[in-house]
Amino acid sequence: MLHLVPVLPRDGAQHTKELAATLDGIGPPVRTKAEPGTRYAAAVVDATGIRTVAELRGVHENLHPVMRSLTDCGRIVVLGARPDPDDHHQAAAQQALEGFVRSLGKETGGGRTAQLVRLAPGVTAAQAESTLRFLLSPRSAYVSGQVIEIGSGTGSAAQAPEVTDWERPLRGRTALVTGCARGIGESVAATLARDGAHVICLDVPQAEADLTRVAGALGGTALPLDITADDAGARIAAALPADGLDVLVHKAGITRDRKLANMSAERWDTVLEVNLDSVLRTTDHLLAQRALRPGTGRVVATASIAGIAGNAGQTNYAASKAGIIGFVRSLAPRAAAEHGVTVNAVAPGFIETKMTAAVPFFIREAGRRMNSHSQGGLPVDVAETAAWFAGPASYAVNGQVVRVCGQSLLGA
Image (cartoon, rainbow, N blue to C red; front, top):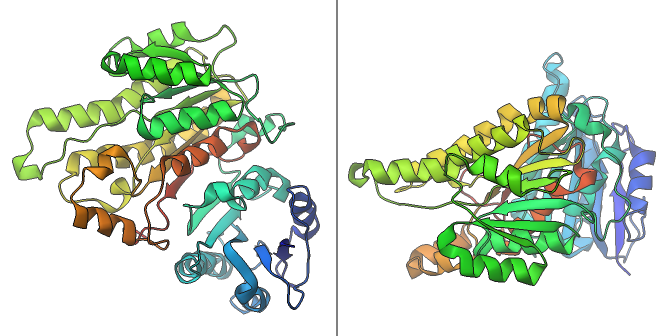
C-alpha cells in the first residue's frame, strides 16, 4: 500500500495537527513516522515555524530517511512561511527552503516533484487544502520546483464558501475560456467541463467550425469573437448568464517570431495586442461591470517561461508574457479586496502541441530535454493547473504565477 507521510520536524512546526487532519481527508492513508520497508507516495514537511539556520537541520533529518522510499512519480511538499523583513534570521532560514526545494526537484528523478508552499501570516493549513490536493496528485505531474504562497492579498475573496464536491467542484458554475478552438485552450475548456462548469468557448470567427465542435462536445456555448475588438468586453458581458461569470481563463495568444532587427512594427503590435492588451481591457471591463461573481470569481491568465527567462527571436512574445506577470501581481490584491475575485497565471514551458510539432527537430528535442523531467509537457498539464486556480476552494490562492514546465532549466 502507498502511504502519504507528513514528515513533521520536532522543532519549527506550527501546523502539525491541522496539517495532518487536512491530509487525512485527501485520500491516501497518513503516517506521521517513517516505517522501514514501506514505499511512500508523498512526503510533506511542516517547516513553517523555522526561524534559525540550526532549525533547518530538521528538514534534513525528516526527509533524508524517506527519500529512497518514495515511489516513482512521488510528491514532496515543504510547508514554509513568508520571509519576515523585520527578522533577517527567520528570512534567511525561510528563503533557504526555496533553494532547497528547487535543488531537490532537480535531483529526485523518476517523475518525482518537489514544491514549497508558503503560508502568509494568519493563514491556516486548512486554507491550503486545494493546493495540497493538486500538488499531491497526478494532475501536477509537470509542475515542480515551484514556490506558491497561500493567503497573499486574498482580501474578501478569503470569505468564499468551501467546496463540497471535490470531484466536480465547478458544478453549477460558468467559465469562459478564450482561444479554445484547439490546443491548450481546448484542453482547458474540457478540464473545466469535467469539473462541472458550463463553458463558454471563445475564439476568432475564422475558427468558428472548430469552436462549434469543441463547444458541442462539452455541452458548452460557442462565442465566435475577436478578443481584440474594441467592444469585446461588452459582447462577452452580454453573452453571460444573468448571475454572472465564475471563471475567466485568458488563453488566446499568438506568436510572430523574428529577431528584433528583422521584426516589423506590425508583428510587434499584433502580439502585444492579442497576448496582453486584450487581456487587460476585457478583464477591466468585466470587473467594472461586476460580471465576475464575488467570492467565486477567478481570473486565470497565461504567461510563459519566455516571459521569465526570455527567448531569442521572441522579444515581442516575451514582453507580452512578462506583462501578464505584471498584470497578475498588480491586480490580484485589488481585485480580491474590491471584487472578491482572485487573479493568477500559468506559465507554460515546452508543451507538445501542433505548433511545437512544427519546430525543427533539434530545437524541439532541446525543449524536451532541458527540464528536470527530460520530456515535454501536454496541454492537459496546463489545463489541470488552470483548473486548480479556478476551483472555489482556491480562494486563498491569489497573485501567483506557477510554471508548468517540468522545472525547466531556463530561468530556473
